[in-house]
Length: 273
Image (cartoon, rainbow, N blue to C red):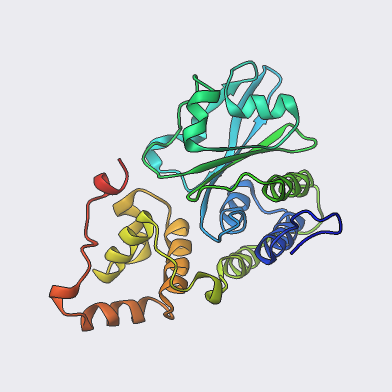
């Protein structure tokens, strides 16, 4: 799909994502709910992303407001970074532009950079400062982003939409029921797009634990992430496998001869070095 100038325009998935993000911001959810909902609607390829956003305070430090997808041991809620540090977030804020890096590029550009949560695999980083409000959103993706004008414009559009996020400024109240409904809508993937795509490492781990009969809550405790993340990853697993849900997955596992079972029961220490 090309724009009138002959350049690449947004894909259908990107357009849907942007539309969903507009709806989410319009409802003005609580900060942690916002992160959980964004996690399902940012990646151009439909995978979950890690999300956190920070606010610049008067003392010159960015401090985390909310997050989703980080392991408990990361202590992301305690993270802070000074405005003058030579690391991606302050740099993006001072330049007032979206910055996108693949994992191998970061140590070369920012020698001071250290990942907050080394336990969780990621391939790309997109940092989107908002136009106003002193907020910066950070997205860590499980896929490598293509360096293109279309990708840059996509994340710039996300940054502009998020600039309208003002918790408590709208008259709309965001109830628990609306939150659950919106989450279900947000994580319902296009099965035709995801079917037969490979599972990520974390999805393979979650699938193995589902096959063992663990509940989402038990899986969350086992791998050190939130139950919401497990639930959302499960939806993507079912879409990729072309099945309806947990019952079908366990039925397929029971029907599979043990000699043909994939070796999925690997420890979390191997999955998340």
